[in-house]
Image 1 (cartoon, one colour):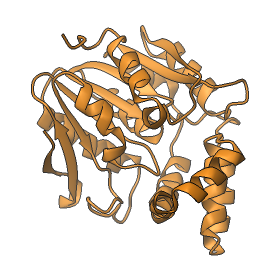
Image 2 (tube, rainbow, N blue to C red; image 1 turned 90 degrees about the vertical axis):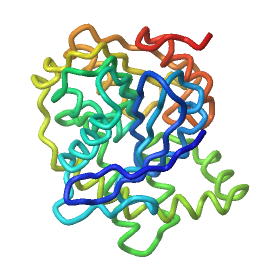
Image 3 (cartoon, helix red, strand yellow; image 1 turned 180 degrees about the horizontal axis):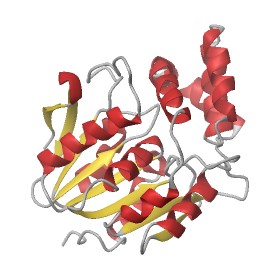
Amino acid sequence: MLVDMELLAIAGTPVVAEAYGDGSPAVIVHGVQSVAAHWAPIAEALPGRTIVPNRRGRSLSGPHGDGYTLATEVADLHAALDQAGPGTLLIGHSYGGLVALLTAAERSDLAGLVLYEPVFPLPGLTGLEGAKAVADRYRDGDLDGALVALQQELLGEQPEHIELFRKVDPRGWQVQLDMLEATLTEFRALGQIEVDTDSLSKITAPTTVLLGALSQDRPVIFGPAAETLVEHIPGAKLELLEGQGHIAHLLNPQLVLDAILAADRVPASE
């Protein structure tokens, strides 16, 4: 059953989360252009109690606030994990995967860490060049162009799939347009982070990195970042999601659920 609740974040900003089930805890951190509801099919199916915060900048939660950085997100996630309790399985996707990664490096009470295509900026291979095109078009008032640039240049979506989405789901397209401002705020925070692979050795939770295997033509940010994380996080393993890209949690949630359950971090439902 869905339960709404408020988590007290730094500066008193409310972060409204969706919670499902009872039992051993899990927390899911969504990415950019996303809200907690996008993870509902997986959150509902996971065993135990799963909490999915709506990160700042979404209509249900408070604004990003002045001085927003990734440290702001980490503090919010610490609050959610403290409420969930020790022994929590932490799952992060994309930008939310980076937030989960940074937070996990500061905790020793996690049962496991599952990261689906987490963003991890690498020198000379950040994949953020496309962010400038998004920002430029947004600043010029070309919101459609900004969203197309985001989906095609950063997420690797095929042009024909983007056009189909715009035509068959105009309401969903508008929702995505409405989230662009929040995404650009998060891009700016991402551009300020300092790469520190040494900090990855501090992660003690058993870690699985999920990487879409749609084709060889994938955005450069995801593969090299995943390989770097597996190399530097003690005991981490890499698992491929065959035939999938960056949004398998929407297009094939059962596959992502199976991958999480197979990570040997949580028991399968009986």
